[in-house]
Image (cartoon, rainbow, N blue to C red; front, side, top):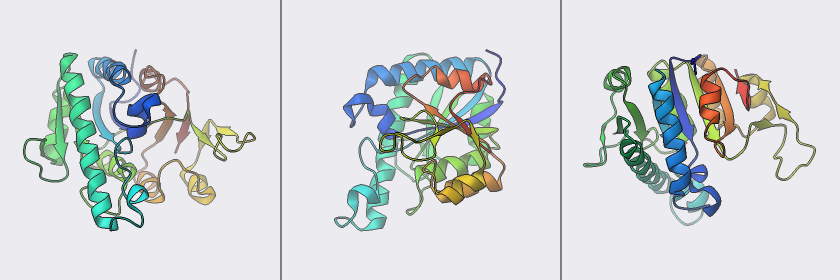
Length: 236
């Protein structure tokens, strides 16, 4: 594979890591994903990873009416740390160089995120997992992915989800939903399409970072996207 991107942020949904189990970890899937990411890194692509926490806790969605918003979001940050630790460990078992950097200080989990150091690690061939979201409540891990991508000057955000692209409506509810091959940031915002939240979409738009949305069910899609194959949906 000859990559068309030099440096990317891969955003993986927590729910996707759970596979058909819906919660927790599907380690067979995680191993396959990590093997694919390792191949991508070996091809010369510099990789940062942001993982959601939805396989354990989805912030305000799980805490609504029960836990105050700030506390709920911080619980979500901790869920992302668990996911990053698991994925980092599997990457290392496969022989890849990987490390966790956290947006919040959690001794033993990872070193505190620093933009310059993160870039240095990636330039040295390490896969960097960005844990803890943005480090602030009221911001999703989608926004964290867009923020980190802007900070490290990534060429693209690869949005690996449990759906194979961007649709005009939820294809699980609307049989007439149409999949887009390409769509602009403005149209995503105007239509209120559930690609990323509006803050993340605006941040990607303001920094001119294309977002490629594809299904993680086939982990090899990561290599296909990096090789320039037109799969899923490109937002930009």
